[in-house]
Image 1 (cartoon, one colour):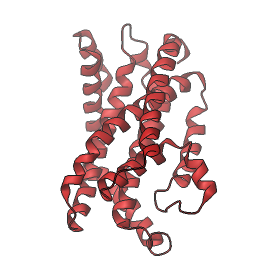
Image 2 (cartoon, one colour; image 1 turned 90 degrees about the vertical axis):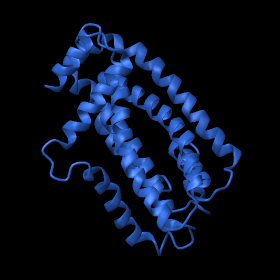
Image 3 (tube, rainbow, N blue to C red; image 1 turned 180 degrees about the horizontal axis):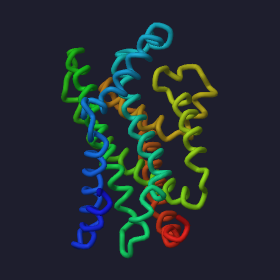
Image 4 (cartoon, rainbow, N blue to C red; image 1 turned 135 degrees about the vertical axis):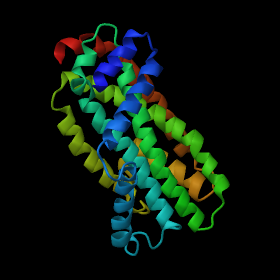
Length: 261
């Protein structure tokens, strides 16, 4: 039903962005179809994850971290957005093989639709963060700093998802490999702990793009301070590298996608 609707949109000459928005709407509705809790499911994951990590680590690891509840929650919701988008991207082309084999179907719209759908989820999760912000009596003005950060983060995740989705068509096991790798990245990224004094983790995170984005967000939004220049340059650099690389690789490999799936 959903795919037939998208094909009808394609026949009516909708643009790539138009198709992507329709895809995002359809997937968003399908995810909540038949659910008694509806959109509450978008809030349940970060709430439970936050509650568990806070109870376990707030004293042992978070005792010396200022505003630890916000520190922890912001890390969780940013990682959730990256994780859900990239994991889904490894299966996206094969799951939509009928659309891929349609003549003239813009494959990029699938990735854009995926990012938009997960952005909806991210916005619901960010509402929780704002509620925590208000409860702690902090100045809501600093929330505005998150707008340019999320735009930058969106471009990074889009490029990364383009790269994974195109490579997954050629390497069937990539979804399993990435599913394992994302767990290691979760543990290696300072989400529920701080790196202070742990040189091995610091050097690992120098090649971890999420470290730059999460640190940038925490400094500006939570601590109201200017991040170090290398954090800013790292965030911008990772965005440019993966955005350009993702588009380049996707355009090179998309030619034979219909044959391989």
